[in-house]
Length: 635
Image 1: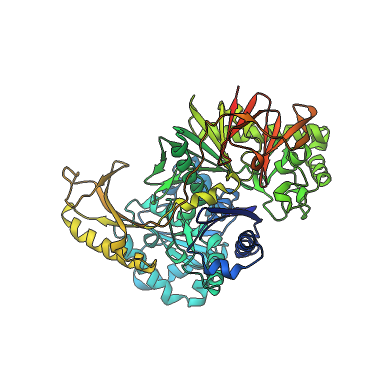
Image 2: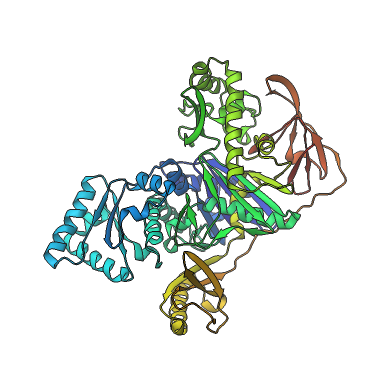
């Protein structure tokens, strides 16, 4: 038994496998206690498996639970998080961190003017006085987390000096109230600016995952789970909560979708795929080309370079729960989101803002009886009221006219983000998944110049499905002073790896080890594989570091299904009234689970299953295979 959980801002997805049996479900995310939605989802899965709620049996017989969250990503997109303070020493200046427009905007949002500088050449008494004054000033300015960063090769020594000083001058309960983080403890990186940004982003993302993950782990332990909760990371691997750095969870949910995309692209023979993972708060855009996920050895968070490898995924503030409103006479979409609480107006949970979910209900795409598998009642009149008050009335339009205008604005925003962040060619396929991914995918593809769309059969929980392709793994890094010290450095990393994998429950002899040399010179980093001997021709003036990747494989899902069956007409379960291009008509509805292999039909139509709906627009046709994967073609 394997369980994967993908926690989003609006919905939490659960995917479980027991041998050949597959189970999936969704539950509303509970932002007030994120561990609650995990257990709500697990309880629902136990009902699917056993016919009644039996959480204890489920958890006591589960081998591994892998978990990803977009909470940190969403917090960064919406700029909702702790107020950071920054203490700089050595030759590092705040201006160094603001080297372009993007980094300046991000720095202003996270740190602003909460910056203090310490001169470590001062004598003991003056340094102590100024250090205490710096923390007090940052605290008074509203900082509730502080990052200390030193510019220079002796960063470890100097930052440890400041750490010892703060431990002496501030009682532990005060340091706990305002945590102080030191850049060299987050990343061993010789590049000061990159390391400082890594520490700042880690400090910002950490609170979004810390408390509820430990709470969830403790609750799981009470049910006698066989193994610790595993956190899925952006690098495509998983590890225990205590062994996971917060910044590595940035866009980890989308990376799950990328792993699933890579697996199915290879299975179906797709050469170039752009994935569009639309959740409640964000749309996550990435590419798989030639069976490879695009990866930066030095990743980027909102175009700011960080010290760790991250896949190339762009999270934009456009989702199913993004607020659509009128500003200066124009319709704007996001990045603010109503999430699951209070949620879109049609959820009838107190929300009054208009979203694309309300639009899809008003235009007929969503059926109140079947939405969310029939588990969530949605109200078309509340959707109409929110659209009228927030968009229609300010623009002098009817609710239906406003809904179509909102639809166009939402589609244009997503299509623009697609073309800005990925390369489109004649053989490009758009993979649309997430709860809102398939919804208006035909319109988005047309705007982006794409003529084929792939909707996985598990589209609604696809990122959760993709987590299943991860192994338990860790990366260990250390600076290398000279190539002649290579063996000593590798031995040190080997000892760290041995301790780290033992804490995961594995002996190092069971694991795969891959070591490489990182050679940085003139702003460029080259990776050289190590095969037991020191490489030749390494520049003497380059910055050198060793990276050791250690992994232990655990079971993965099996890809199934093929296209190319003999085609036959798809089976319609009825009709639905849709508003398309200013006209209302009755169009066929096709339930995915009712379709035989090779089922085809043309739009306009509605293609849906329990947790997603897709409007097949005029000029588009679809084919369903034996795994319920779907291909849409534009004539």
